[in-house]
Amino acid sequence: MKPASVQLVQMTWLCDSPLFQNHDEVTPVNWDKVWETVYNIDEMLFNTNHLVLISVLEFLSGVDHVEIALDEIAELPILERLAVVDALRTHWSDVALQENL
Image 1 (cartoon, rainbow, N blue to C red):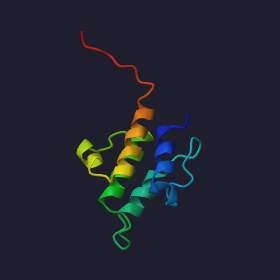
Image 2 (cartoon, helix red, strand yellow):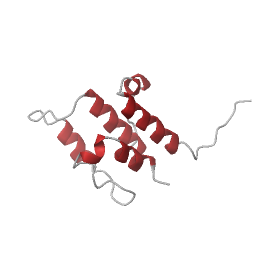
Image 3 (cartoon, rainbow, N blue to C red):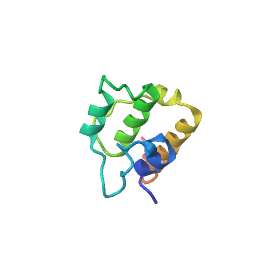
Image 4 (cartoon, helix red, strand yellow):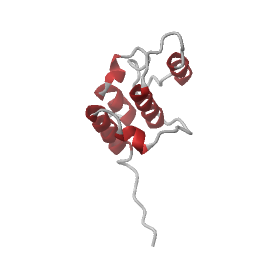
């Protein structure tokens, strides 16, 4: 089974971006380079939906302290939203649920 981060890249526009094309189980994303590119004022290549997907990918890649809200995910276009939900399902599939008794 593919890691959730690889799954999200393959199911969205992220696979077309040179920043994420080589992301796999062996090659991690260079987050410093990603955020430097995202916040490059001269180019302005990314919109709000792009930033949400990048943040979800950052979370799935294991980066601590990622700030992303469910309402931001809910406002994504339907196909991207479904890709995020599917990737999150994969990410949490090994997590055992605990009940408070």
